[in-house]
Image (cartoon, rainbow, N blue to C red):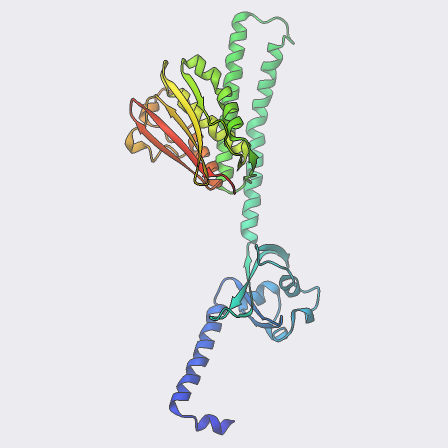
Length: 357
């Protein structure tokens, strides 16, 4: 064998050198990755493990390379990782005090022949710790901001019910103003916290079959009193039959409330707000058209940013969070919000989202 190598011609020596170089470079590259990599062949035999995988699983590859998965000790982290089915979606496992995200996939040749399976291991411990810290922060903020407000609202309700005697008519009007302001503040707190939750990925969107017509009619019914007080005509135009759509009704009701509420708020007395819906190419479209003050052309791309307020909106109450929250919710459903506007003539907000997930 040794003589054969010595007498090998120059061409074969170059090929052999290239093969060894490629293998060395591949191993070096895989060893430099920040994720663990493990390869098993079609017979379930472990044939490769990079340095990061050794570190994450507390194992020396020399002791396991060449062994079948079912030959590994059952209680070892390596066996736990390789025995799980994580092809369809990644799994998270607690391994040696760390949280590892494991995913696997088939390895195919150029001829589409299966060569084996590759496993990728990522240490997500810090990410999970940060997420838990954010969740704890939101929970604490929710409690600290809402609890005093709920106490104040409770006292206002108790006074209105006459628990401390009869109420003077002038005081009743003051109590109603306090109650309305409290509800407005509560809504602002909810918007602020929900924008944060959505940005941090802490809100789970639960899409279920929903009657879009009923949802829109309910939202417009809730806004009707505001429209009447404002002297604005609120019209709902819906098809006779609108197929069910899949969405998170609770979250989308907030979107519709924000968009329709804004349309009513920014439309002068005698104006009109029209809400319509239709189905097109696998999407549902909800349009809210108003004859209000409109949005300057340079501001249409900014209205969905947190706290942004156009100059035209000066004097109108609002936190600048409603549209930002609406955009986050719609995008979490795989949709978009479009806006067209002309200053002094009105705006059209169109929500477009897939009918099904």
